[in-house]
Length: 399
Image (cartoon, rainbow, N blue to C red; front, side, top):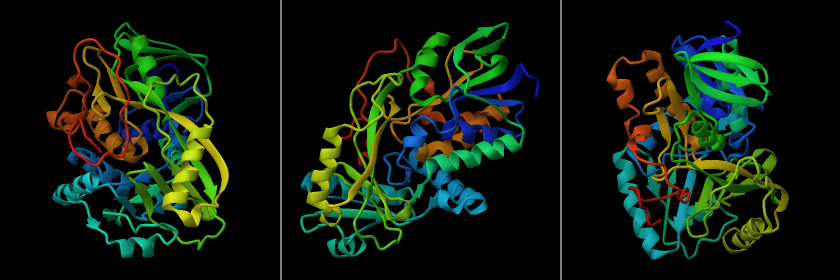
């Protein structure tokens, strides 16, 4: 590749950016460059929980998550079996109103082809023996859901993309991005690159990058927290990932008999350059209280470490994927509302398809229709993040 020109420059080496580069070269789009001031998966990807579920609130999301699951499973089988496993994902509630919504979601998910099933409290107790479920009014499981190791999967994408000719420019500071003489000029500490097209895939930094180009987008970075714990006893078996809808706490298996727990999501905007990367006492205390109440068998688990990362949200909980209106050659893939790892592979497949045909068949654009940035018009106004594992469809869910 020429040292200063490329066809597509991807800004961001998280799982979405690396997956996109991987799919672009598979579709014979070249030369491709991936730029990141840090290393692959150094941002939100490396701090993500990695739960991959089809228990979502729109058919488009279900299709994308299903594609991601299939690709993660295939790549893990070829390159690193520890990078993905299908362990199942169960959710429950003791609240009658939430139970009704959860029951309604089962029929909707089945219509979308999701292999979801209702659970009795007896089976729930059998599968999650460290939990207490005598008050649960409704619970569901999708046994084909899985967990991915986000950093490991990102490395798989990056190494394969690099092998196929993608140029990775990492570890140099960002200076500027501007349109000049019919191309995009990216200035970094490592020099200048001119690109026919640019994809902003910078996670929580995407808002700032788009503002610098003069094409701001409705994105709000926010802080979220998680923790790694080591139970005093472990069977060593791969158990279901689980989510208590009332406490808003999820737990998934980790290597070495450990467990990963969240959700310490904050509903206020955060600065990705100045946020606190460590978890706060309130979040750790909430986990401890939740374990005492719902997972007494884990109540004495040792806290190995706790951390925070910054994700980005949109006003309608759907990501921004596709061409930025009015900006020739500028694209975005951001605003995943905490579900970027879950959607990354499926979204990368679709966006790579669009970039491969350019201004060609509208069918490639149609595959991104629910998440195209052009659905928002007018001035960008501040909004509060509303991410989370919702169970109702629509833009204004109660639960």
